[in-house]
Image (cartoon, rainbow, N blue to C red; front, side):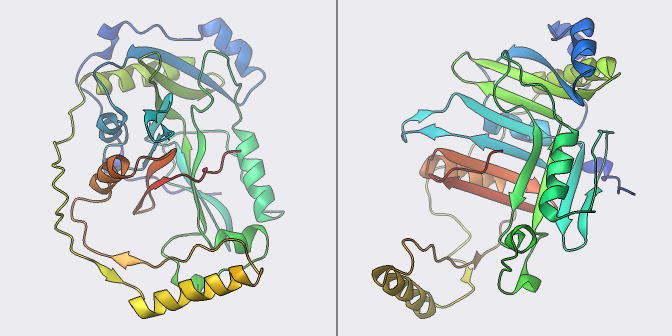
Length: 317
């Protein structure tokens, strides 16, 4: 199986600062790492920094630079930030699943990823996920890395045989996942940054280097530019993919189906297109303050960006 190499320009830039001056206390030690590596494909190595001058939004451009990355945040009961926020960037690889099967692209580091297309699409995903499992340690948050990404509507056709209408118009593959092995987790309650590197057997020194390099970039992070809250915007109303009358007709038909007992819920939607010269991250920055929700995310991969703020849970396995 061949894998395409990611353009080095999209990877985070290394800091010129000597991060060793931060005197990181890296865990586990070498003996503890080797003991875990005998039982698990990947072992999490981590170090902590104070988080009193950092924010998830402020660090995302540092961790991901202009390349692929993911940001997860949460607001509980619309009034309090959740305990953990997650920032991942510089993934080891990208996994794509479509009608041709599961494949790896943009690989920049070696992970023991097992790719098999002998069974169903679901089995291929399970095999890949199991091949890079690591221990769940009590000193770490529940989420520190792994396969993270999206499932488009067209994924239903691959996973359970329910094809989406007009799959040829899909702007992206049905399933795209980042193999996140480098991440920063915010523990807002303890005011700590937890820097994590997931490392295969024999890679302890590389894990130390990865954590020191990540700490160096955080120490020299440049704060994103300030954004006003005037709300006037410059993108205009955008161009919808269907007129208002057609959309109202769809809403009306959903109501009829609910009254008839055919369905209990329907979520009609339409696409609105407009120019976003600065990309999607400024949109996410506004979304998180105008509509704070339990599940907020920003994902950049495969030449696209996804931003969301929803009361509905994201999928967690």
